[in-house]
Length: 306
Image (cartoon, rainbow, N blue to C red; front, side):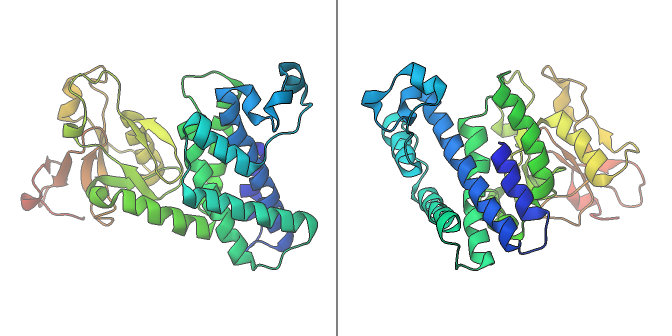
C-alpha cells in the first residue's frame, strides 16, 4: 500500500504531465505494488504458491524471506489456475506492458512519451483500485493490512482527481457501468465524480437487516446510506440548514428515523436539478411551485431548479 501511495504521489505532486523522474518512480513503485498485492492473494491461498520452485519450499525459509519468488506473469497464471481468480486478458496485458516499461527504466532508460507511460500507469492503477477491495481487503478484519488499507486509500482518494488520464479512462468504465442508473447516480463527496448509484427500493431484500452499503465506483469509498447522506450535505452542498430529512422508507428496519433524504441533491442525469433524493431507497422529491418549503414526489407539479 505504501508503494501504491508513492506511485500516486509521484504522479500528482509535480506538473502535468509528470517529469521524467516522477514518471520513473511512479512506474517502479506501481510495479512493486502490483507484484506484492497480487502475491498477497496467492499467500492467502497458501504461502508456498509464491515460491518459484515449490519443491524446495519450506515454511521456515518463507518466513525468513530466503527464497526466489515467482515472476509477475507466473503469479497471474497461478491465480488463474490454482486460486480460480482470472484477472482478464486486458488487465494481464496492462501489467505485462508495465513490467516491460519498468525493466526499461531500471536497465536502459525509456523512449516512450510521458503520456504513453502515464496511460500504462492509469490502466494498472485502475485495476488495483478494484482488485484490492474485492480480493484482499476484508472490512471485518482488524489486521494490519486492514488498517493500512483504510489509511492509504484515504490519502490516495485525495489525489486521484489530479491524474487526468486516470480520471478519463476510469470514468468511461464507470459511466458504462452506471448508464442505466444515471437518474440516481450522485456525486461522491470524496472524489467529486458522479460515481455513486443509489439503489432503488425494489432492489433491496425485504428481510434486509443492515443499512445498505453504497460504494463509489471511481475511488472505491464505501458508506452506509445514512452516513453518505450526511457527508453529501457537509461536503457537496456545503451547508446544513435543514436539507437532511427522513424518508418514508425509514419507518422500518434497524435504521428507523435516520434521515436519508438530501434536499438540493443532483444526479448524473440532471446535474443542474434541485431535488430531494433519498440515499437509501432512491425516492425523489421536487420543490412545489411558489413554495419555499414543501416538496412533492411528482415532478409534474414541481419546478426543477431554483
